[in-house]
Image 1: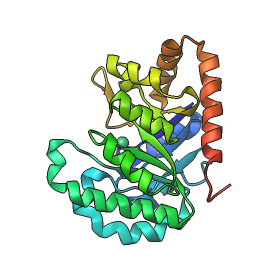
Image 2 (image 1 turned 135 degrees about the vertical axis):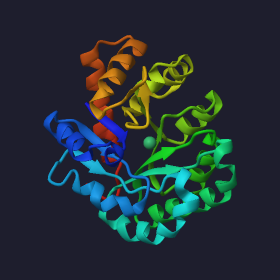
Image 3 (image 1 turned 30 degrees about the vertical axis):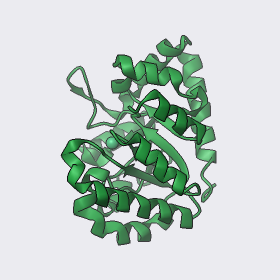
Length: 247
Ligand code: MN
């Protein structure tokens, strides 16, 4: 199983959660929200081949942490994965909208210069702006839109430009989420949890709860769970092969 977007460092016992991921043989993309958290978050997975740590600067923190872009650029050579990055158009973050745009453009341009990265991207209430930015930086790498909740039109645009999508249990529990999933290119979907932020039935999601997404996708696609798991594993391998900077 694959959790392509979770925040290992933000669980109350990160070491314990990381250890359990390793014991379960889970593939994990452990995303970070600030560059200064990257090294110690990567340490959580030291020696674990299946747990990779992405270098990020979350749009909700852009206005407080833009000063870490220098560190971001310095660390970028060390990882083929970038995230969590993106834009957040929620009214709560309206005041930081301009700086979010500058930070996101800076990161995309750094990714271009570095030969491209696999990028886990946040696009809440900002799908059009995220897609516009990705269009301006076509060599930034492979975008994976995480927990996509834009319109069908925005989805079609993102799909047409080659975006991937990571889908979690919370998305599968909503009717709108299912309608979106049905319109996504099936061969460009991977699973995620967005734990510990995402909850289902009041419970914080653990990385291994991707099994809920796996079962949900099987249901939505009308496939068996093993067939769905095979399809998702194929997708995952294809996605990793898009990494231009690293084999
Ligand atoms: Mn997240």
